Length: 186
Image 1 (cartoon, rainbow, N blue to C red):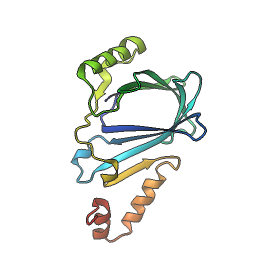
Image 2: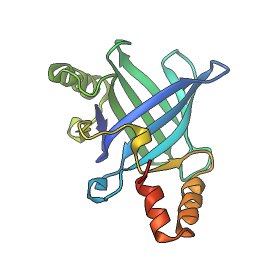
Image 3: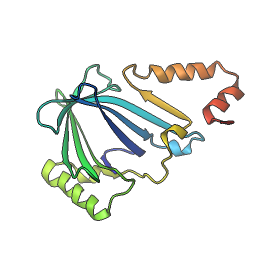
């Protein structure tokens, strides 16, 4: 997996079709940068939605972690073989500020290096994505999402869920909080 401008590792993205069939609920789970120095296995889950906005591969994305409420972006599936890979591209534009994101997604932890180079070339030549900013995401140290000690979920309630959980843990005696966080005894 490769992503434009990220330092995260262990990135996974899950797309679930909405009940009305008009889009997807998306969960992007990643280990934040430098989390390997923490004694805890920490992940951040960003929750968003994709709503169809034209052709089958064109969507309007809304991420619940957005600093500006109701901020939407254009989201496109640029290429896919439906079995092994997909390339997505997302663009936020507010006044003169433009943020773009592109990801080479894989159903497996690794893609053939030659295939990755072809897909990178597609992003660079056809979609004007700056290739030097495409970072390889290390999937080798990933663990099952349920096995993580702490999952900061950023959803429609924003960070409030994480703050509530931290507040709850802070009221426990230290040894109980440590047991819950590190899942000792499970």
